[in-house]
Each structure stands twice: as structure tokens, then as C-alpha cells.
Length: 310
Ligand code: APR
Image (cartoon, rainbow, N blue to C red):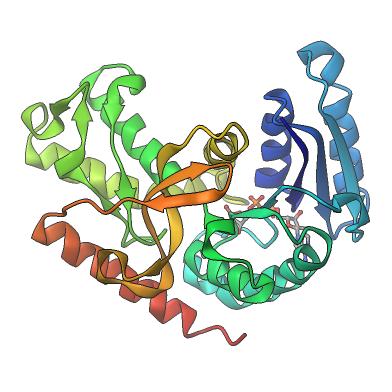
């Protein structure tokens, strides 16, 4: 268990993340910070009042526009920003969220200089870059959450199509978090059996498409917000691997320095997460189609980066 984890942003993703972190007792204290006075304090108090019933001892504390309670946090999760509205692409969000993430990163640099930062704000790959640049932290300590969520959606759809347990679907979705993400069909297995032996190409293509549009599918239902139950589960899986030094191999957005032939950008790749944060990027052989899809996805990330001036 860590001493302190901070969650920046007390909206849907941030608040649900704080609750899941506390329920798993991953830190003694979880601090939730937001710019709207009353929201972080109220949600944190409400969640802490659930502790005697749920049986967790993690204190959840809310703070508005005040980073002093976050001082010395070992892990910081950044969910601050505005969520995608119907019809809005992730890229439309870039400038607004870049300004918010810049401001948050300056605070983290001052109050939590040793933290491992897990970024969730969208457009994800670009917000990771903003965080890394502004904090000046090494790539080991600035990691983005996207692939775990995209992979969870892909696994859920496959489990439904095959009528098997989600636990038996092993898969990875790489690339940028957006319409160009790259589900690795060639590495997808059901308890070790290649999925291509169990589903025909037509059905697999439909599942891959649905995965690519997974975020938009939820936005279309909710109309006034975007997904948060699965996103918060995904962040907490990453944080848990760091806190418990599990060294899980998870698809995360990492700063690339030649891996997969890509450099100078964040992109989703297989990462080993442990107590030092990003401990290793694992390079696997891709099919020519997957490699070119990853390249295309990386180009889309670079284009979005170009919209931001730091
Ligand atoms: N500092 C702290 N919090 C901020 C700041 C800031 N500078 N600016 C905005 N916020 C807060 C908002 O007040 C709001 O409470 O961030 C919160 C965002 O919450 P929601 O609007 O509910 O959005 P949410 O669904 O939680 O998504 C947050 O995660 O998945 C991504 O695309 C999503 O970028 C979005 C982020």
C-alpha cells in the first residue's frame, strides 16, 4: 500500500477512480482535486462515508484549487479536462485540454516531484506528451491509459460473440487512442487458441470496428458525457500493477524512442508496469498490416501534437 495517491479531476472518471482505488486500499490516502469548489470535497466525503460499509480504511480527501494536500503523492492520476460531447472527435478537444493539463502538470511538478503520473485526459497520447514536457519527468514516470480500456472493450465483445468467459480472452490493442487504434488480431487467443480459428474474418472485422468506435458508442447513448466505469477500472489496473509491483504486461501509452520504428511521441505499446513505473517496453513482431496500421496511428498522433504549442 502506498502512502498517498492523488486523482486530479473529480468528474466521472476521476471520482470513480478514487472510489475504486480506495476500495482496493491501494494507498492510505486518496486525494481528489478539482477546480470546482465543493465537488471534490462533497464526492470525497460521500465516498469516505461508504468506508465503514465497504470495509476499507483508505481515507478519501477532496480539495478544490489547492494542491497542498497532494504533497508527496507517489502516484498521480490526471483526469482533468472536458469530456467529449456527441459528434465531437477526440482531436477537437486538444487545445482546451492541453491548457488544463499544462496547468495541472505545473502543480504536480511542484508538489509531487517524485510521482509516477498516469494520464487519462484526452486526446490521450498528446496529453501524455504535454505532461511529460511540462513536468520534465522521465518516460518511466509518465504513462497513459488507453490500451487497457480499448483491450477490455475488445475482450468484452469477443467474449460475447464466443459465449465464453472474458477471463479466457487474451488480447492487446496498440496504437494511438482513437479511431486508428490497432487491435492485434494475430495475437488474440482464447485460452491459447488463436481467435482466427474460432471466428470468421467477417465477424472479427466487425468486432475490431466496434472496438475502434467503443468510446463513441457510449457517448451516443449517454449524450451528455463519455464512458467512465470501464475507463476507471482500466486506470486502477495500471495503478495496481505499479503499487503492488506486479510487473503486469499491459498495453499503455508510452514515450517511444525508436521502439516499433517510432520516436518522439506517445503511442500504445506493450508495457511492463512495476514499482518504478514503466519498466520495459516489449517489442513483438507485427504482421505487415499491423505494422502499417501502427504507423498510420502514430501519424495521427503526430498530427494532433502539431495543434498544440507548449
Ligand atoms: N484542474 C483540475 N480539474 C479540472 C481542471 C483543472 N485545471 N479543469 C477541469 N477540471 C475538472 C472539471 O471540473 C471536471 O470535474 O475535470 C473534471 C472532468 O470531469 P468530467 O467532465 O466528468 O469528465 P470525465 O468523464 O471524468 O472525463 C475526464 O478523461 O476519459 C477522459 O475524455 C475524457 O478527457 C476526459 C477525461
